[in-house]
Amino acid sequence: MTSQSDTLRVGLLVPSSNLTMEMDFHRELPEEVEIATARMLLPETTKEAEVVMIEKWLQRANLDLSTVKPDLTVFGCTSGGALFGQDHDRKIMRQIENETGSEAISILSALSEEFTLLGAKKLVVITPYVQNLTDAVGASLGEDGYEILAIGGMGITDNLEIGRQGAKKIISFIDETVNSTTLKEADCLFLSCTNLPAVRALPELRTRFPEIPIMTSNLSVINAVRRRYDKVRHSE
Image 1 (cartoon, rainbow, N blue to C red):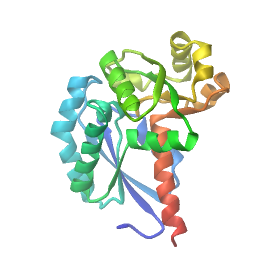
Image 2: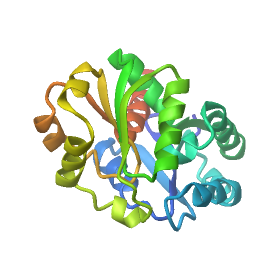
Image 3: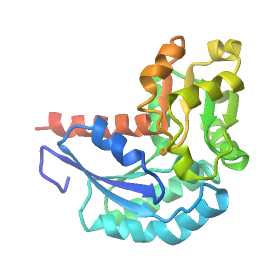
């Protein structure tokens, strides 16, 4: 570890139009987890824009983060990691590790940890994305061995609008998209997207859907960071 022995320094890579993930990290993680953020230009939430974000802006953001010498760097874009499957996501993590000198975590890798801990195999997936990004997330999860019982996307390309989808809108979309029988068969309800305010919506979501564990993109990686921080703290 490069930072002080009782802290964990986390580099956070987020799309430039994301207004949710930093807030969730600062709200949910202990103050001993030091967070440094770098932004990758993303004017809209489309496949084409995310490809440009990764190919043109990821390296620059990594180099910026390397100057704070992070212990761990998070790639904070679910659909960007899922664009071309699990190998693509792993390639992004290798690039981050090479260019920041730190361990990398993606949303897909954090989800794999969470679903293993939950014993979840059958998923219902909700996204705010257009269809091809929703399909990419579903395909990547399927490639990792999960059965997708139902999946639906809200069709939003304006990332600022994604950040405005509070609990009522999320619950309404789930009610419209997934029948109660399918929810009962699932092991987990997964809400994709690091800009979707799903962590803040969890109290209402858990009240509305008490029969099923709920996981979100941000919660998965917050839990992954917390586990690594606990290892640092307990190694003292």
